[in-house]
Amino acid sequence: MTPSEVKRYLSARKVAPLNDIAVHFDMEPDAVRGMLGHWVRKGRVRLHQEDRCHSDGCCGGCHEDVKEVYEWLNH
Image 1 (tube, rainbow, N blue to C red):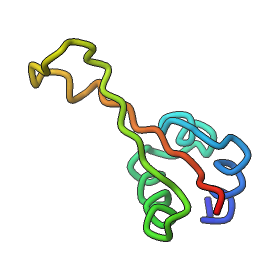
Image 2: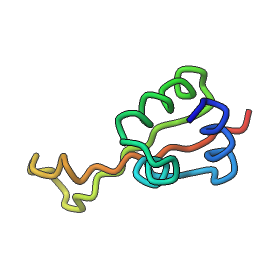
Image 3: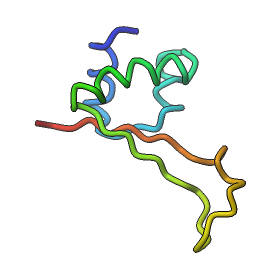
Image 4: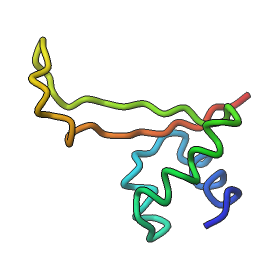
């Protein structure tokens, strides 16, 4: 996987969860996260973290349920 391949994939999808990207490239999420960090630093990708805890307050036990979603920014 190269930065250009990640760019093509994410710019075509516009938004994708980390796990989808990892499955697409058949790589571990940590490795994909590092490659996405390249585009985040360049200002081309934005990281959104969605907390699946839907209560008014967080109990602190839902950290494993945080979903990383990456968005390709057109600018």
